[in-house]
Image 1 (tube, rainbow, N blue to C red):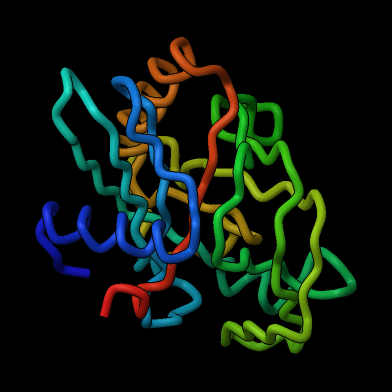
Image 2: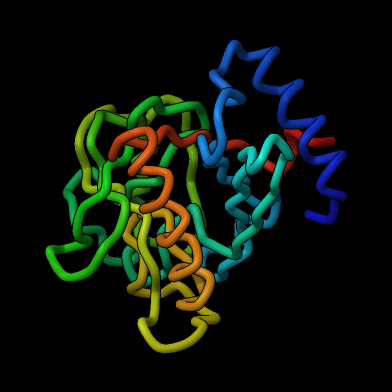
Length: 200
């Protein structure tokens, strides 16, 4: 999605106001984590975006990272659950994440509160987001990286429904920011997932 930082900020604040979402504007490094799901529902590409808005010395800062908000093709065809593969529904999830370890191995944001997911259970490589087939609960929907060494170009096994970074260097930069913010505001972080269509 190609929008200037100013236009993106203005559109986000309008969307948040219309939906009565919480937008953190008080204090420095009080992070607003916003996922934007691409209109292109390609199941195996890092074609979504994580945008972070926060103040630093009173000035608004925008950071953008390449992620996937969708599961990869492998888990769509081979669901981990009988009910199907989880796809996080759009919406705002307050305190969804907390600092922890992804699969006990490395620093990440791990699910701390229930979320709503679609269940895709037809075992093809197309994303199915049927509002009549959803579930709310704790599903291990974390925010983590793909390859620890470089950048990944296909999702495959990197996501079974998590929010996953394509680039290890972007992820490391993100986690440094998270840890600094956590020292000021605590270990819990809210997350808002929007659709690209919300901006047009």
